Image 1 (cartoon, rainbow, N blue to C red):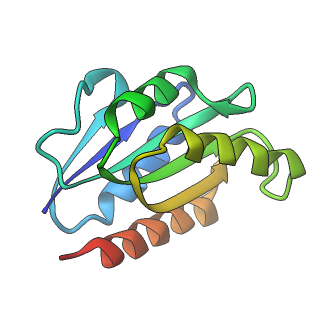
Image 2 (cartoon, helix red, strand yellow; image 1 turned 135 degrees about the vertical axis):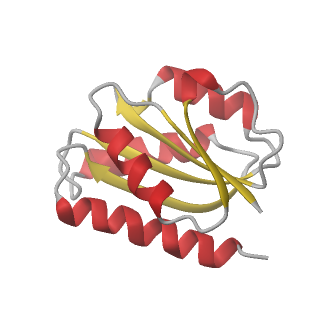
Length: 136
């Protein structure tokens, strides 16, 4: 199995989550910035991470999801600037999932971009759980 972690990060927070996810993958793996990925061809699974902007996925991430994930097995991880118990957040997360319509979504993780040890540990746990679920 070959796995790629693709991420978009403007402040470095989503990159930290991507690195935490990447560390937990026990398979052939790559980590790449979204701007450097034209296709998911050659990968059996992709973790895709990005920030929420203006109440939905950041535009480059949305475009990538709409064009590249049809029929692919993926998991999403999202960072945002709001509290994790915010009512508005659920609508924003739904928009992120909707952008990945057509993909086989094996997992979804979100956390506030103000990262701490606990949030990064949760990201690592998310990665372990997803990998366990998708292992052939």
